Image 1 (cartoon, rainbow, N blue to C red):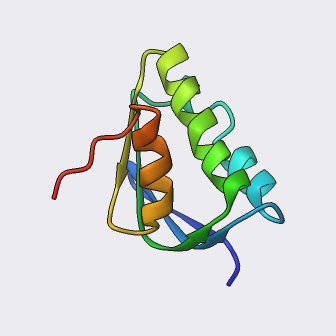
Image 2: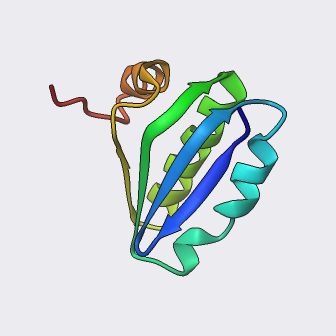
Length: 96
């Protein structure tokens, strides 16, 4: 399944798979995003799978948010592997 990024007003929805073959599209879409917004909300309910390159792309987005002192919210119950990785870095908090 291809990667689709939907812009829904002040939030984005990620659909499909995020992997090595399309991670550049993800990175280009969010390049300089923190120069244009005070927060970034990404819903991953429809993210079916993510490989290590995709996880690293989210990790880099998190680092950019910290560098620019902006909020990054990842919402939804999409790919649990990504949450587990970010949680291990003490980046994400999971609420059950």
